[in-house]
Amino acid sequence: MSDFPFGLMASAFALGFFIAMPVGPISLLILRRTVTGGLAVGAATGFGAAIADSIYAALAAFGLSAVTAVLVDQAHWLGIIGGLVLVWLGIGGLRAAGRRGDDLPTAAGGGAMVKVGSVIPAFASAVGLTLTNPLTVISFAGAFAGIGLAAAAGPVAATATVIGLGLGSLTWQLAIVAAAGGARHWLRLAVLVWIDRLSGIVLVIFGASALWHGLGL
Image (cartoon, rainbow, N blue to C red):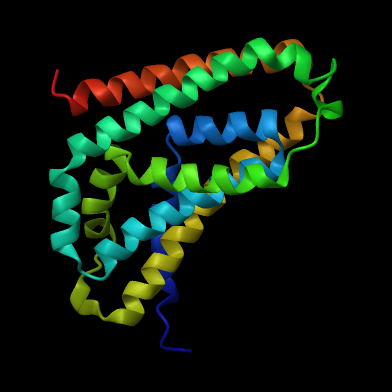
């Protein structure tokens, strides 16, 4: 156990945290789902995003450069797919804003209970959306140059890096969940409606931008 590269894992943790930190469609989706759907749905979305980050980390850490190169080459197709999903989610947020008055009472804290079944779709959609995010592909294609990891470092170093990076990403995602979960109990209906509207609009913009770049327009 003394040979385990904890220093490398700590560096990977910091890298994963800062790669996940920029506010983008995934962070916005976690925020909205936590506020409007509850802690379980928000945490499931965060775990899904962290799992997807860990998958890309594993591809880079274990030297699967051929797979990574293919993903980078196909970034435009991934952008199209991810863009369509973001637009769909954004439209869903706008539609939810219109239904909010019928679904919830005057305060978020007394809202309807989250269905257990909604946790699995939240997790799966977050994995798929993060995997199809071209920014994620490009970030992880060159991420490990920053911490000096090479495939020749061996499987232990690669494993430590993947674990550290995954935990770093998960820490940031759960920080969003914790902040949004603490706020949702005192948010009134009007605020929830505006969260749905604003997040819907921003997700549509992110999706349209991804489609624009993916189609090379």
